[in-house]
Image (cartoon, rainbow, N blue to C red; front, side, top):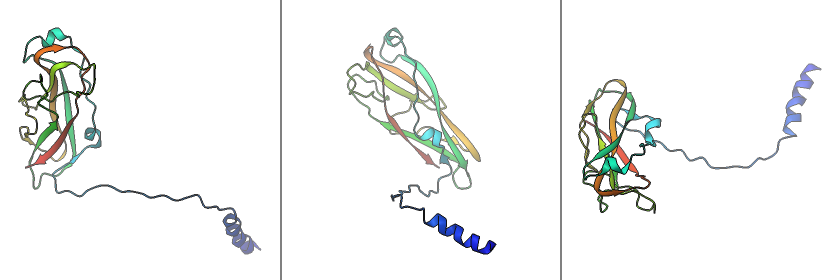
Length: 173
């Protein structure tokens, strides 16, 4: 009698099932031979620069609002590669933006003018857009490559919002 109850229970569940729809899954990833993996918290960061007064950017070349940020690397294996460099890419060369800076988004009508974003590496070297930073030695496990971003004055700075989008790529040596 107990055997009959076990056989009829699955049949009872099958009678109540209904088709729920279907879909497609897209899987993305990659296989690399790099020394490390860029941590997911570093892939798409928002770096908040402080608001600064125009008076702190009164002369061409003045720098203000220095803000530290880093790119975190995980799962570092230094068997083959021992150092890392970073190249930052973005819009540069907009009229009024100083050399070696990234230009702000020019679509905003209320944007600050004659000011750019300067990035320095962990040695305090000002980075040129699209050129590699100073190589930093890697250690097994987790590493952080430190940078500083700041506003840099071009000509006479006018106040307004400041937004810049900068991409980066890590290269291993």
